[in-house]
Amino acid sequence: MDFILVVGLLLVLWSLRAWISGTRHNRLPPGPVGLPIVGSLFKIGNKPNESLAGLAKTYGPLMTLKLGCLTNIVVSSATMAKEVLQTHDQAFAGRIIRDATRVLNFHQKSIIWLPPSSRWRSLRKLCKDQIFTAQKLDASESLRRQKVRELLAHVSESAQVGRAVDIGQATFTTTLNLLSNTIFSVDLVGPDSEIGQEFKAMVWGMMEEIGRTNLSDFFPILIPLDPQGVRRRMTIYSRRLHKLLDEMIDQRLYSRASLPSPPTRNNDLLDVLLDHFQDSTSEFGRPDIRALLAEIFVAGTDTTSTTLEWAMAELLHNPDSMAKVQSELQKNVGGVKQVEETDVARLPYLQGVVKETLRLHPPISVVPRKAETEVEICGFTIPKDAQVLVNLWAIFRDPSIWTNPVSFVPERFLGSSRIDFIGRDFELIPFGAGRRICPGMPLALRMVHLMLASLLQSFDWKIEDGMSPKDMDMTDKFGVTLQKALPLRAIPIEARRS
Image (cartoon, rainbow, N blue to C red; front, side, top):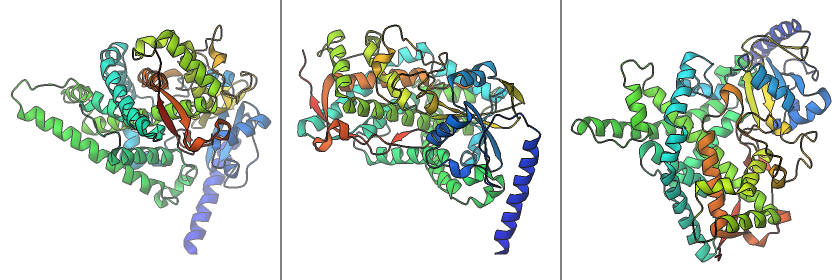
């Protein structure tokens, strides 16, 4: 009982300190009046993206929300997003460090969570110059084509016996093996591998913990107590992933040391990173390699497979759109020649399907930033160290921007409505914008378009158990990514097209 009283008193004192600090900024954007100590925590619920969108209808597109000890500024319009992510990008380039990311000091080596420092810029430059350049992506096109062929072979086996395919699991395995070949020159898992399912569960578990509403993030005094067990679970996931990566790094180091000089090279990403990090002038070391590889695996596999699953779910839910995209494939590619990345430029409806999927189901629904300095926007003061939350989910469903905003309408992106999504058109920025735009976007877009086109060209699809499209469960569950609450299982049918 004494322990509870002490913790309660400390929470009151901490909240009082935060309240006094907040009174200095009497020009904060409007927002709800919160309860003592907890602020507006009880207004958030298990789907913060939707709760914040609902509050914005009352308080406006720039809103203040006190969550425990943390001042949050919520952005819910394209105009305000442009102010934060472009006009004042440098001032909002930081991140509030979540407790889950402090496990094994991950936040000190992560591109996602590092502050905008020279170390962060060096890692970004490494990704831009060594991993995601157009030249390097073009050079690895044959690898992506091979991985997609293996996916189609796996799906074909299911088609021959009328067995449903778990779309999320199948595309996750394909993406995982693509990344593992790009990095290590080996497949990590087979199509039906238990390891693949375990790896997926581990990655999704990590994403869920990072995205979870964690009391320790709003009351830092609770961090040592870990009241919800978030840090404990993240530690288990992280150690398992680090063990796998360490084994792969050790094998490569042993191979390089035991072979005659100069050693035979795979010329994959691991060789590039080892060369770079073993340079005597490099500021990075092995922990940085491991952290970078962990981010590539976790972020790359989850976001890509989740987007593919939602795209297939929306097409099955909207059969007319499915028919249109398959007709476009037949007309522009045919049924004999396998679709390739170079064909995507001639498939505007397919591109519209991907854009509409990313609009309705953005991989990251709420983008967090941190105010590095005090900033004035539209007459309001954003205090230093406030967390700024850009609610992409709300922006992408804003009825003042989009007609029928909750409907799946790929046609809205055809003709003159050529909205780009690479960070310039703030109505649709699923990969973020500004200096913290997702560096893996070029690879993700190539994989999503190629896998989706291949699955639709080679197979027709029907929902498992003869379910009607209108009866499909299209609900999501909130995490770092918006995953489909009920995994999509669909039965492939070999397409007979000329």
